[in-house]
Amino acid sequence: AQKVTQAQTEISVVEKEDVTLDCVYETRDTTYYLFWYKQPPSGELVFLIRRNSFDEQNEISGRYSWNFQKSTSSFNFTITASQVVDSAVYFCALSEASRDEKLTFGTGTRLTIIP
Amino acid sequence: DTGVSQNPRHKITKRGQNVTFRCDPISEHNRLYWYRQTLGQGPEFLTYFQNEAQLEKSRLLSDRFSAERPKGSFSTLEIQRTEQGDSAMYLCASSLYQGRPQHFGDGTRLSIL
Image (cartoon, rainbow over all chains, first blue to last red; front, top):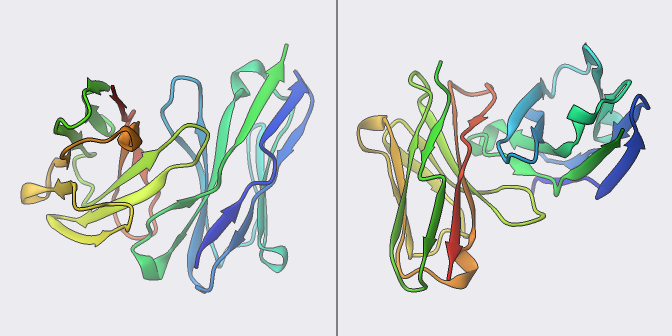
């Protein structure tokens, strides 16, 4: 069965610090996709990134970077030089190609950036 | 690209009443998903449509819940005889095809009095 674990329930950092959000996943499929979504206080889920299981290249987008390691089944998310607008709940999610790609979400990490 | 639209944004109803939510996906997206999110949790999958066909339903979707997607366009989710435990945010998402990300609407927050 597919499962996503986000062990960090809440993290608080001072503005401009770097912060890493951890995500560990479980799946038996060889073809799967990993996602990060941001849920700000307003409530909508905002798509951030999608990686497929065959692409382990790390990715950087501005202040955001993602580290995908199949050997440890992890897909961690780092925010560099954090800003107050980064405050939100962040969800890691997994979908399996064999299961119509319904998303299985972790329980989320609430990130608070202190000005 | 107008995004996924959900109506209403909020619904307050008395226990035992029926409620219906609507989701309008992004126009060219043929895959549509319903999720439910309770406080402090991640969204949980409820059901999935490819065009007008409902292809999968979660065990969370009791017989009081029904979803439709006539003509493969908008979708409705109906809850009959609502219970306190149905209070949650109901989220709709759509995607273009396999492997593409799901884009979410703003959700419908249901409160049962």
